[in-house]
Structure formats: structure tokens, C-alpha cells
Length: 269
Length: 154
Length: 108
Image (cartoon, rainbow over all chains, first blue to last red):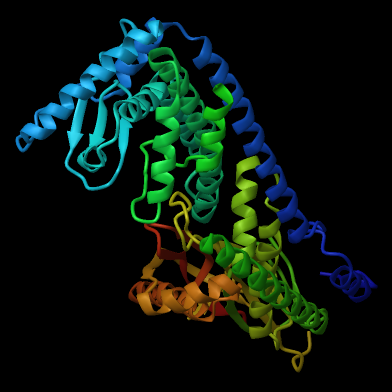
């Protein structure tokens, strides 16, 4: 076997020269391009999906709303509580009276749900509504001895969430986040956490909007029933003063600041 | 939030350590390749080797190496997996591993005159079907080293 | 025992064929090695402990093949190939096979 004359020189030139098997593009540059494009895609996805779902939910007919609610909500829930005191039963009756006034004031709520009210044994001042219209009120809230107008504001606020179809909006956002998780699959664990943060932020921004809308709805209903929304104002002021001792948590997480909420009600008058 | 900060710090550190290790490795590989240019010469795919010169020694020589990518490279590659395309971060790992394995084989046969029918075999250390398995490149290089007897005349 | 991965043994003549011989070994990564390698994986570079493991596995496979060839009264193995497979994650099989032959030196 013969070997080419300048074999050594050619080999040396190949070794010292550029590495053909390795791409010239640096990993760092790749990294930034990929990160930016992924963030861009996620933001675009969230934006487009939110716009589409908002349009869909606000233009949806009542029949489809009820159909969707039936498919996503808990079918059976035991509303009987063994330790309900006579005092609480009295208050429950009172709440049911206020509730029927609210339902009568808003004609769009007809045929949807009769909003059964349940008292939860909890010292926190809190209320929430389930997607199928069941309202929960804590015994801590009832102990505060709020006036009828103030209680009407609490109930109207919760019913406002339902009337604004906020439960469906939250549902659609949950679909969005799971869609993103499916797209960006399991082999990037740390990246999932980062994504979680993005969807959480998106939820918070929307939740504040929803709370403001529910407050506005409650104010409007109060004006319709009592001619004034003072009940809402005094309720918010009381909570604001008590904020250090009790935290007003909600089923629909974050709220706008108390001052903002007062401003919304002030504007209505 | 803490997770994100930890991730960024880890990425920064592993980027610098990884690129320094890679640079040094390539430098060493080049030096050794230059040293071994002449002896022994390698041929690939010569199964029917014929020679008229007197042969002193025939032996199988092997060289093996396992090389892993750093965290930064793995992270970039996992991002790249979403879009597809060239997995450029792994190119350098594979190149380093193959050249290192060949060099180890050639160094073992430093006194031989020629290595005939050199072959490179890749070993799968991690199951590629299991996600999150760390990319590791294991290579076995082997060939037949032949030493001629220079004292004997033809 | 003379080992080659070509069709002949240079300088020698094949007197008789003895048949196929093979040797295989499955090696698992152990937890201690794996821990060290896990740390090294973050930084990158050559995994020395795994390289040693691979060398051992290759030696084992070759030795087993040589043992078989000895039983066949052969004195050389030609056309040796290595094959590998991944049975499970964390274990590697190294398989060596070749043709056992009887060779004799060409008298010059």
C-alpha cells in the first residue's frame, strides 16, 4: 500500500483547520433565540386564546351555558349540615329572602339556577360560588351582623360572578394552560414551572378584572332593589378596617385594592 | 421564583465550565492527533489485507470513552427539541467522543506500523425512549494493529 | 491467541476453520458511579468511571470469546466485531463475535 506524498501536511491541515463536523453557531446564541421565540409563542398563544374564548363566552347562548355547566360541575352535593343552629337557620332564611330579591331584580338569571345557599362552619369572613350556582357563606361572615343591604352586596357579588360567566372563563384558561403543558412536553421539567408562573400571572390579571366586574354588577343590583349602593360601600369599608385581623379570601383568587372597589361603586351613583 | 433564579445560575455556571472543558479537550485532541499523524497509519474497511513484508506482531487494539454533555447543552437541546432541526449542541460531544476513542486506540498501538480495518461502535448507555435520561456518548473504537519486522529482509 | 478484525492473520496461513465464537457481558451502572457521573453530567466532559466500566465490559466480552475459542482448539480469532445493545436504562451489553481459526506461520 502506498501513501500519498504530502499525507502528513494534508492531515495536519485538516486537524488544525475548522472542524467540519461541528456547527459554527454558538450554543449561547441558540439559547437566546430559542428562549425568546418560546416566550413569544406562549404570549401569542395566551393572547389569541383569551380573545377567542372571551368572544365565545360572552356571545354564548344560555342553553349552551347550562350544557357546559352540567358537564363540568359536581353533580351531587350534600347541602344538609347536622350542626346548624336555630340562629343560623334564621339567618339562612333571611339570606334566601335577599337572594330571591336579587334574582327578581335580574331577569337574565331566570331558568339558570336557584342559587342554593349553604353555611360553612369557618371563622373566616368569606363567601364563594360553585360553577353550578351553589353559594357558600362562612359562619364567620354571619357573626359580623351585617345589615341587609350589606349581605345583599355579598350575595349579589357572588351571583355577579355567575352572571358574568366567570366560572366558564376560568375553565377556558385551565384548558389553555393544559394545552401549553401538552405542547411543551415532559422532558423540560424546570421549564414547566416557568410556564406555571406565566399562566398564574395571566389568571391574576383577569381575576382582578372579574372581581371589578362582579362589584359593578352587585352595585347595579343594589341600586335596582334599594335605590342606592350604600350597602356595598359600607361593607367594603368595614372589611377594609378589619383587614389586619381577618383575611377576605375568595374562591376567585386575587382582588383589586379596596380603594379601587370603592371607586367603582362611587362612580355608579 | 427561587427555582427560576437557581436555574439561571446553574445555566450560567455550566455554560462557562462546559465551554472551558470542551475547548481544552479539543486542544488536547488536536495536539495528540498531530503527534500521531505518521504512526500508525489507519485504514478503514480493508478486510482483505495482504502484505508481502514480514510481520512481527498482530493484535486487536481498542479504545473506549464515555463523554457527557453539560447541563447547559442539555437544556438548549431540550428547547431545540420543541422546534426540531439540527441539534447543534450535541455535535461537538459526538465529535469529541469519536476522536478521543480513536486516539486512545492509536495510542495503544503506538509501536505498530499500521492499524487495519478500524471500526467505531456506539454504545447506548441510556435508553433513548426514557425521557430525562442524560445524553451520554459511549464509543468503542477497534482495529487490527500490525507491526512489521524491519530486521528481516524481504 | 491472536485477534484480528480482518479476514486473515497477516504473516500467517489459515490451516482450519473452527466456527463462530462469541462473548457477551451486560454491565449495569452502579449507584455510586451514577452519583459521581450525575455530578459530572452537570459540568460535562469525560466520565472516567464509565469509561473504565466500558473497558471492563469489553475485556469481559473478549475473554469469554477467547475461552470459547480455546475449547475449540483454535489459536486465532479473525473478523471480530463488537455489537452493543441497551436492554434497560443504565445497563449496556457489549457483545463480541468472530471466527475461530487455526493458523500457522508462513515459513519464509
